[in-house]
Image 1 (cartoon, rainbow, N blue to C red):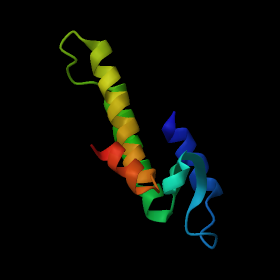
Image 2 (cartoon, rainbow, N blue to C red):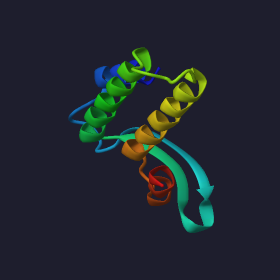
Image 3 (cartoon, helix red, strand yellow):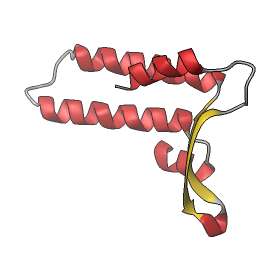
Length: 100
């Protein structure tokens, strides 16, 4: 669950350390310098945590799934992953992919 991972990130985050921490990078298009880069800074950590808490609350207590709970939960998980991807992406192309 992303909330637990973000709680761990809060505990391990070094305020005096590097600008971006917990960076994950996988080359995507090396010839153009593009990669799948995710990381977090102080502001992104706060926004991602708040976003995860809101999504966790909306997943735990749905108002009305209109007798289609599978679609509701699938869309909520998709929206949560896209939201976190926007806040944690460090590559412009990856940000564009998550935001569209």
